Image 1: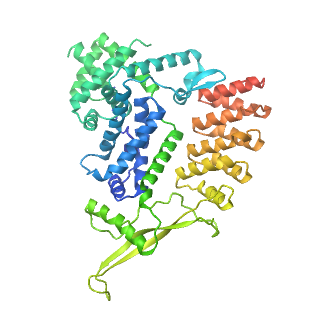
Image 2: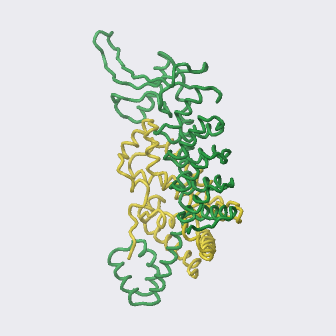
Image 3: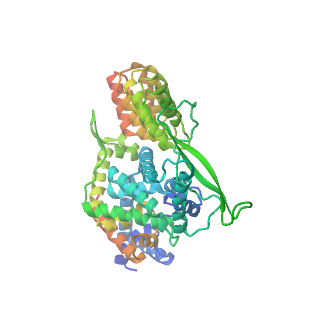
Amino acid sequence: MAQDASGAVGARSSPKIDEAGLIRAVQRGDQDAFEQLVRAYDHSVLRLAMNLLRSEEDARDVFQEAFLRVYRSIDSFRFDCSFHTWLYRIVTNICLDHLRKRKVRKEEPAVVETPEGPLDRMNDFEEAAAHADPERNLWNVQLGQRIAGALGSLTPRERMVFELRHYQGLRLRNIGEILGTSEEAAKNCLFRATQKMRVELGDFQ
Amino acid sequence: MNCESVVKLIPLYYYGELAPDEEDRVEQHIDGCAACAREAERHRAVTAALEQHQMRPSAALLAECRHDLMRAVYRDEAPAVQAATGWGHIRQGFADLFPALFRLRMPIGAMALVALGFVSARFSMPGADLPPNTEANVISSVRSVQAAPEGAPAGDVRIVLDETHRRTVEGSMNDGNIQRLLLAAAHDENNPGVRVESVDILKNHSDSSEIRGLLLNRVVNDPNAGVRLKALDGLRQFTGDPEVRKVLAEVLLHDDNAGVRIQAVDELTSHTDDNMVGVLQNVVQKEDNGYVRRRCEKALKDLNASVGTF
């Protein structure tokens, strides 16, 4: 019954690439290699930023800032940890800065005006079939609002650990490594986050 | 193991973060304790709800992010790639080469890069009659180096360079050569960023039948959703044209990207057309995306047509 989360992150599920070779090529200034390296990870980085910041615009900023930092500082990468961990350290630091700056920002769904009233296009991408039933649709909207509220109740660090474990499927040991803390501390953080989520969402049937 | 400790372990159990013996003990406890079983079920339900509301970036957004990033990277590198000729160019090349080599503490390879030039569009120049304000850059790489070559004065080295030429072409969109270059770049299968950028420029000149033909082609054939969206933008003012409507209908029925179908349905239904009833009914039957389906249903109602087929 327990879930295993291996293989959930970008490059891990991509066809094998010679990552070390690519990194060395980027260090020599090869932009083609950089583009290949970006493609191995960019989807998971953008997804992480979107889920954490709940804003497409902020996620775009994080994406650009993170990969530019990688490009500018890749000479300092010494292969003493995996590239994935190094990249995620950069991304999570930028995201944590965003989260701390605004503390808690309400979710901004991509709402568009239609002849039938306001419509969240973001929801349409994800929950295609549910919209056939108006009651189900309403339930979904309410649940979405509750989830946004529940995520908003977490501290930036809890939010980060929860996101990395729940949606990105990283192991707690790896999360600790990325965030510069221990596996045990990441575990406690995840526990606090899930407790808060349960309290916020537990009665929603 | 008591209920309090099991409740604490349930999230870790679901995430597969418990040791095998701990996992067994949690399972045994849940099997025999109704309260903890309810707690486990509640956690499972919350997890399922969270899964449903996960945000996933669209292909178009990802393409735009990649494109913006690579543009920023090229801008970063731009000062390093300067117009240079002859020895001045080689000197510039070495100025770029040596700091990098010292920094990396690596031996000089047979193919060390000299200048970090990057040609985005890999296509042949159509014809030799380029616009007058054309300048040439040379991008070099070292093929080989040889100490004390035979016949040379003592202390000399011989360096063999491979050189490729880069040209920068500027001109107005009224210039046929500029248009042809952009039309070629819009087909560059190696670089979706260049295709997005080219189609983005060309779409503002869709009164030309050649460009309109390209946009129709890209909407159907480009593998990148960002390019298809830009091409659809360019066709917006021609939604009354039967040929364009036919292509929009094809996109609506067959494109695998919801964002592209949303734009196609917006454009197609902006124009009243009885001939589209069959297509709209088909879409209502098979479409997963709620927005697209509702737009089709509304268009059918406006046309006094039935939503279903009989």
